[in-house]
Length: 356
Image (tube, rainbow, N blue to C red; front, top):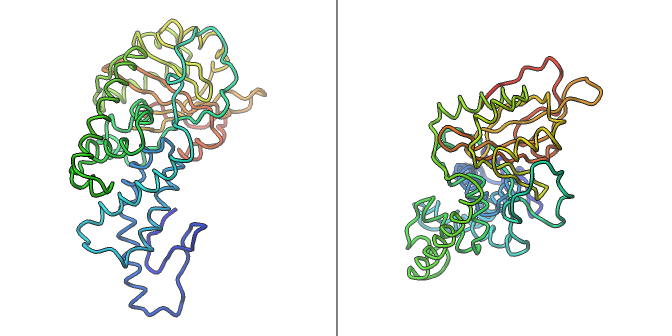
């Protein structure tokens, strides 16, 4: 929801933006428009920050909207315009902390259990589990620059940190805030902010050690190589070419299937899944997009009546070196496909992009 544009103001607690009182003086209108436009320039980076905090893009958008509303309402009390970014992050952090206080942490399937055999169907989705969700890459250049800090595994690992430690680590190690700025943001001492950062780093290091058992260590691949590998993967999956997929997958690659807790590790189990319980994916079409700084695909399975293709999953594909290290297939297509600009259905003659 955009707030850009002169002469627009918050409509109230229900959210949204509405035109202000028409009897306001023109000078007031211009000043209000300037404030709104200034705040709006921070929406993108605040959304990425809030997404890492809460693990859900939809929740992040809501949090940023609430933060911008609070900032707009308090703009007349703000002093020192050079610190507007820190001021906005303070507000956004508090909004996220309030949201996190009312629910449990989000997770990926590997956070809940060990890997399972590929030849067995998944159990019913666990009740009351909140899943880490994918984030669309609206700006490919920004996505490339953020690197590991927006990967699904990193966002999931962040959820193991207490919320204030999570914010401290993101502000210091990802966004480059100083210890003094973070201390002021939290209303704490520099020593307390540094201590929180060290504890957060230690917890993440432990999580990375545990994650090493669930998949290969990340070795970033260049953009050109990732594009070629993504195109090869899309073509191989579309042909259901197991020989080609075996060549593309890392020996310790993982495949996870939220909202099911089931996940697999290793080429044999992934192949057993695809040729067993997931055999209905044969003949699928993949439409390229991008999520969490990685190539992603909208997967469409053939309609039962043979007329076109229906949404089945959003696949986020991660690479380590020249191999696929992880595939996460999100099944919530009703919500995710519109978010990623993917069509609700494919016809038999619809053009399909091969790679991201």
